[in-house]
Length: 264
Image (cartoon, rainbow, N blue to C red):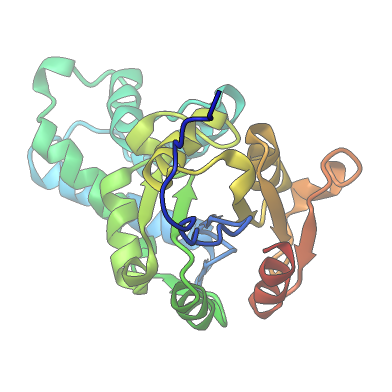
């Protein structure tokens, strides 16, 4: 019996598919850095937010409120890290006001939102691209790689402004904060939006960041290739270096293209 012909003509020329389909970067100490101490920025912003809140009629807030605001932010970020679920900046301020006895019935949502913006304002403009970051992103984009940024950050609206201030958005296909999706790295669900947008398998992306706990472990959780950036070493990485091993390590961003080329 003669076989049926399921195909006609010459085989179509298939487009080569690279092993690496896209790169996912972290933000702080990977693509950007602060040009002033973070503690100083938080203290300045907390005082500005406090002065604004009092100017709107919240005159019975305690004088120590700015210090409480900084402490509440640090506590919320630690709790978010432990639970891998983001406690947003807006919620943190509301909880703090209730804690100091301010009646929920007297809270104005717009005032609180503005206060959070003022709290974070000093650091919004204190972020600057890491040396070589813009050149790296330009090169990778020119080579056809889609690029994403996923960061743990407690306010998405503020984080998106920071990306604009640093000039990074031009190069990014996806820019996602933990506050927007509630999950926090290394929770694997936070990578889902990027994988879906790129129609990529986890093993086809590279996760790049400065934190073994968040960036490298997060990438490993989904089965991605991982690169640990050590331009600004994290103290907490010292206790994890024997437990979490990245696929590659870079001391400068200029080392990255050669690694990606090798993996392709």
